[in-house]
Structure formats: C-alpha cells, structure tokens
Amino acid sequence: MTTETDLIERLESEAERDLATAPDVGIVMGSDSDLDVMKGAADALDELGFAECTDVETTYDADYTYETWVVSAHRTPDLMYAYADTAEARGVDVIVAGAGGKSADLPNMTASIAYPVPVVGVPVQEKSVDSVIGMPTGAPLTAVDAGKSYNAGLSAAQVLARSDDALRERLVAFHDDQKSGVADVSERLHDDGIDGFIQNR
Ligand code: RP5
Image (cartoon, rainbow, N blue to C red; front, side, top):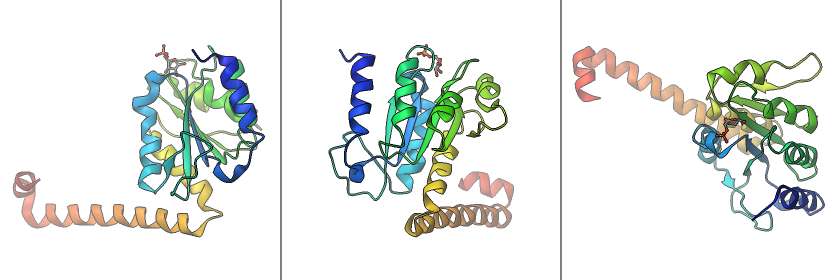
C-alpha cells in the first residue's frame, strides 16, 4: 500500500526531472468523494484538447496535460505541503484545488504554499464557499462558485493561454460555439413558439 511518505518522495523526485513531460495543470481535491464535482475541471480541459497525464515519463500527443491527485489538508497536511511546494518545480503552471465541508482549507493553503503559482479554488459544496474564498489581503486565490469546477478548468486554460496563441484560439472558438448555441436556441424558440419549441426539444 502506498504511504503518504511514498507519495511525498515521488513528488519530490519528479521535481528534479526534465520538465518536457510535466503536467501543465494540477487538479487536486481533498477526497475522492470530491471527484464527481472536480471531474468538471478535467472535462473543460479535455474539451480544449488537454490529455490527462498519469505518468510523467510518457510524452503525450496533446499539447497540454493535467494531472489529478487526492491531497487532504487535514488528513495529509505533509502531502498537501509537498504537492504545493514542488508544484512549480514539477512544471505545473496553474492548480485547480477543490475541497468540501465547512473547513475546506485545501485550496487556500495550497495557494499560500504554491505561491506564485496561481490557484483556482473550487468549493465542492455550498457550505465550503466561505472557507475557500476567505483569504487575507496579500494572499491571493481565485475561486469559482460552489461546484463550478468546469469554470475552474476554463480559468486554468485562460492562464496558460496568455503565453500560447494556439490555446488562446481554442478558447475563443469555445466561446464562439457557446454564442452560436444561444443564438440558435433563441431563434428556434422564437420561430417555433413555446409549444413548438418544447415539442421539438
Ligand atoms: C473534505 O472533506 C473533502 O474535500 C471532502 O469534500 C470532505 C469529506 O471527505 P471524505 O470523508 O468523503 O473523504 O476534506
């Protein structure tokens, strides 16, 4: 069975290797029970052509990759520290961190330790919002609304796109698709009328 120490050693050794195969985005969550919510961040990145990096020795066809880990601020504080502390050296450019419950401390602690790597916090539940966004002045964290991990994935891509035109174009195309989607629905609602629209939906 893998111990916390094993995982910390793995992260630390990855921090010393070639960055060519480094994951660009790190998705961390306080528990695997958060995965249903946090998967949204991966879904957004998948849509933008990212691949999931499950092995840092592998070179993926995709231009960008993300990785996923369970890191609990309260049950594995040393692992949380190691993940955040090695993130930049491991090549991670932006972190999406989510936690649930009333003491959802993983996003804000990760932001403090990983600084200056930006962290997008995801309150996994409504009751987690205050503890995720409640950072003191000088300790920045960007956060999305409860459960909106999909937007956190998009925000992470926006950060990367500032220095990559191809990714910027993919984000623009994604936005254009959304605009067309709304325009198309609007026209069909208007032209078919409410009853016809519902019938054809
Ligand atoms: C938080 O406690 C986790 O982020 C999770 O949302 C919640 C419950 O965790 P489990 O008891 O399901 O592992 O730290």
